[in-house]
Amino acid sequence: EAAKKITIENDASLPAPTKIKLRDAVKTRGTRVKIFGWVQRISRIGKRLMFVIIRDGSGFLLCVMKNKLCQTYDALTLATEAAICVFGVISQVSEGKTVPDNHEMAVDFWEVIGASPAGGAKKLLNEEAHPDVQLDNRHMMLRGENTAKIMKMRSVVTHCFREHFFSRGYFELQPPTLVQCQVEGGSTLFKVDYFGEEAYLTQSSQLYLETVMPSMGDVFCMAQSYRAEVSRTHRNLAEYSHVEAECPFINFDELMDKIEDLVCDVVDRVLKSPFGNIVYELNPDFKAPKKPFRRMEYKSAVAWLRKNKITKDNGTLCKYGEDIPETPERIMTDTFNEPILLFRLPSKVKSFYAQRCQDRRRLTESVDLLMPNVGEIVGGSMRIWQQEELEEGFKRKGINTENYYWYIDQRKYGTCPHGGYGLGLERFLCWLLNRYRIREVVPYPRFIGRCTP
Ligand code: 4AD
Image (cartoon, rainbow, N blue to C red; front, side):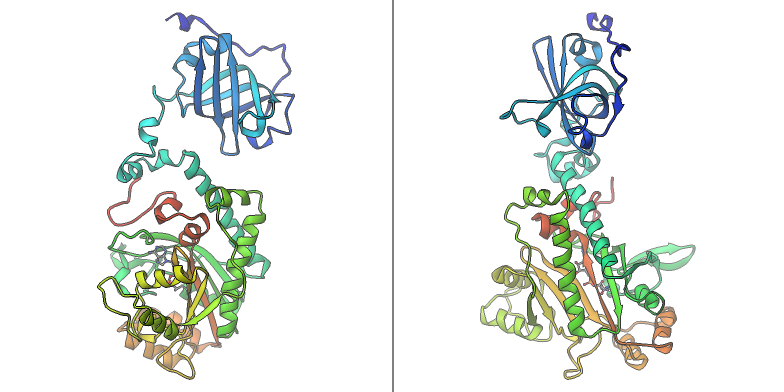
């Protein structure tokens, strides 16, 4: 009650403050500034001193509030996650103190913009809480320091992918995500009632990228893809960000070179960016991969797995001609402990569009990029470019071609050899930032049983 009587005011005789973001705080030291942010931490020392760390997304700042400034009702009830505005002058602190940016603000006035309940968001933000409770409170977890770092790196990495493609002369396309064609098999399609018609959430934008090569040349997109994966695994999501590219008039070797170039160049750009240090903060042992990557034929991989008696989850050995499941694939990749371009996979395990090898018709000009600790991060192939062969591919997979007339038209009007790939942004982030669970690198993960918040 007594505190309610204590008031503070902005002293009009002081210089008018400049409104800044915390990223500019070092530059504006020594002048009076005004900063808006959220309360990260509070420590009260007796009745006359309070330390408050605020953040605004661009940085952190230690604010020092003395005397009346920490005795008001707002000061006594201030809780973490409240939004506040602080006025004052920032100055350097003596070396040896662990303070953000090595400086602090002597606050001369401050106010609450949006209060936070007593105790702050501790209950919701608790990193020890059960994973489902954490996911229910993902909106609050995103405010946590570690999660925020990951999300910022996601933004930086996305930017670097775009820079990579633009620097190599690609154009970007925004493809539709509501579609009527499957790309990667019917078992993972999400069906949608589209004004009474059957439609799906797209599994891949590849087919659409192929249609614009004749007008745009090399093209890429970064769009959401959807997979109705019924198992909860640490590397699969129901919705993910798919970085896809498609290039006309290339051969299979050139396709593999492009995948290698993509990964090495993007890592290089991320590390050279102003945020490159965050990679090492989150993944201290990170080593940038070097070209050329190990190129391993599918048949050698199967032979290696059999020779080393690395079995599938059911205890049996992998067989030539079948898909290599996740577990043996991961053990192999972790054993080599370097990126592997696994190529020439059997047509049986690939989609309808994969081009067959000239010398071995049962194999395809396809490639997966496998990374230690994560497994497959890229899947790509040359595409069947002759109409008859394509129609055979559809038939083999039992796909009704009615909805694919536009895709088949590509083979009628100036068809050409071409290829492309898709990279899962989240899998790339798991590898770069050394996260085991893929849901850590998505703002709001979607997987079976989870569509909220
Ligand atoms: O290997 P996929 O299924 O290939 C395609 O979709 C091709 N049409 C892409 C193309 O050539 N344009 O998927 C490509 C990549 C995988 O390597 C993986 O990184 C990621 O997409 N991915 C997933 N990421 C998270 N959750 C899932 N459920 C994923 N499924 C695939």
